[in-house]
Length: 465
Image (tube, rainbow, N blue to C red; front, side, top):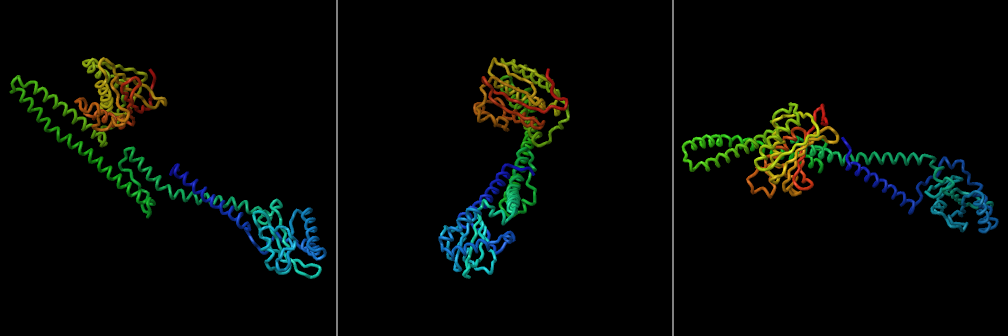
């Protein structure tokens, strides 16, 4: 399963959220309670002897009072870069120096003998033990080791680094699975929707791990399947309706043509114009029905197999010649420009119908006295042939360009005219799509409409001429 931008976004946001939570917790502990571990004894402090510090401080206090104690402690700090605090047996501070956070609480903890108690914070390590003065009085001595002396690292060793790495790995794995659980159903529905949009009406969400869930994702999958089934039924019903109507209309039209022929033989000359008009309308209906049948065959997947090798230049030249003959009667012309040659796999009749519909549409709407331009050229990658058909007509409003290839759609300015049925471009679009190509319409610079038809070439490729 491919990873989507949604997966990456969910993963990153969950990772950042959890990381921010851990960071906020660390900052909170640092600000409000920096003491992160309290132990009665640690192996690392086994070799740390506080006796000299405690005995020296006790002697200085008993001999010279607080002033002597402070002078002694200042000498210790100057030489050892550590801070010592002396407390009496009740936990009262005897030094008079500002106490670090946690020192008073550690001094008040009872201890037996020379047992060392330690508390580690982010800023320093505090170690405390009991001491006895020359008079036999009991004291509590607290040793503060600043951070730059390795207060945290000596207690934890290098383990805290590996612990942080392990925490990040666990955090990443948890975020990965959360992101996957949230996005995999959406990705599956997107893939099914993409297949449905590409014309596969049988596309469904089939992953049982999604459909059997009891949450909104399973409802989304089931609702999509229901929607796809409904769309497939509607499209199939529409195709069957087109097919059935076209077939049903052919029989009465055939009988109408026969009756018209019989009526001509018996009618007076005065009704001949009316007879001619009936015949023209009958032929128009026959053409419309034939177009409907062609469209139904293409969209229904029952069209001819695409097995012929078609010389596209020869095919387009034939269409251009026929269109030029018809255009000459309406004071218009058709101009063909060939910039290369190539073959296409398909059905010549179907492909000819597609190109012919586009060219005839251009001849119909180009201004009188102008020419329809047809060009055949290669796309930049050399894997497709591009056919351009341009007229010199009024063009099409930009909002309506994308709807030109819809069935029975006609531009607003031409809907009231009798020219065209709104099927020609729809048939051309479906026929080109059946050949693996594409159709696009745009307003040309200088006026007029340009229809572009792209068709993939066979292995022989496209060659310049």
